[in-house]
Amino acid sequence: MSSAGPSTSTEPMQEDLPAENMTSRDYYADSYAHFGIHEEMLKDSVRTGSYRNAIINNPHLFKDKLVLDVGCGTGILSMFAARAGAKHVVGVDMSNIIDQANKIIEANGFKDTITLVKGKLEDITLPIQEFDIIISEWMGYFLLYESMLDTVLLARDRYLKPGGLIFPDVATLYLAAIEDMDYKEEKINFWDNVYGFDYSCIKDIALREPLVDTVELKAVVTDPCMIKHINLLTAKKEDLAFTAPFSLTATRNDYVHAFLAWFDILFDCTHTKVKFSTGPHAKYTHWKQTVFYTPETLTLSEGQKITGRLSCAPNARNNRDLDISITYQAGDEPEKEIQYKMY
Ligand code: SAH
Image (cartoon, rainbow, N blue to C red; front, side, top):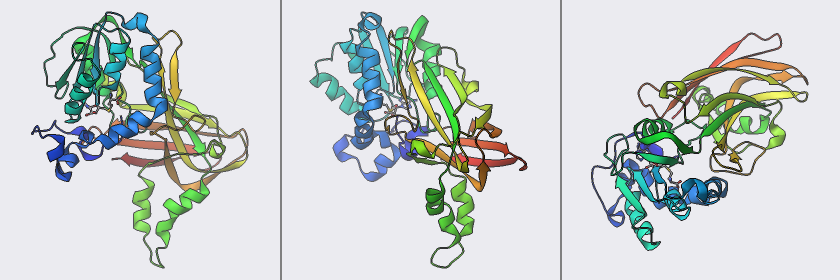
């Protein structure tokens, strides 16, 4: 999924407005209704191409199977599944984009194979009660921001047959440290002096807001460390709030201005193990990477370690926002803890 703005944690649309009558207020309440966000996701060829490869290249897994597409959007994954030979596909989406999906399904001759249901998966009754396969593109920035993984886990517990498959079935989150002086200067230290005025109160807020952006591989100054491994077949909702220790070893002498996070996705149930990474070493995706600036600059020598722990939990008031804290220590410096908020 993409960053859909304010509506993603909220209720389904109250009104069934045709797209041509929707105003900016309606799109604010249902940002997935606009084609633009789907355009960004569909054009992310790493994302959409990986799902296509995982599904279309495995017709032996899909032939004559019942498939549930959680958050079907424009219906692209449902159509891949139908192409791969599924007996029937049910696509669910709470956004008005599903009205377009219905037209797309019909225009492409899938009316008899794909049934779309409008509504929040948690609240609706599906025409089929047991599925062989669940497909879903649920990942948000930093994997879990605005993520609908809890919805996919609920769909699994409610609708997946024993031994059923989930596409994708493994997600892994990584952390490293980066040298990022120029951009930190522009984004964080900028607030120290704005046309000669002291704006440093904003600097404190800016620092606590993780930045989603692309980072060049050469900025990475430590080995990566895995901080979370999610097996979708077995994960529980409670696992999505976690604390993970990390140890990052410097690969050269350099300064550290920030931590960097990214995730990898694996379709482990496929023959060829289709996978993709959103890391700085991999091809661009719309998820980019996530940067967590530290208040001070650390100095590392090759082989030296930064140790610490990262905690991540859904915000109590809005469960699609994330409260993230990073505690870290290097050399003789005292341990530090920074609280970040993704919203
Ligand atoms: N599967 C599509 C769209 C992915 S974006 C594609 O790959 O291109 C995720 C979609 O999930 C959005 O359209 C959003 O409206 C929908 N969604 C999010 N939470 C949902 C929920 N709880 N119930 C139903 N749909 C949901």
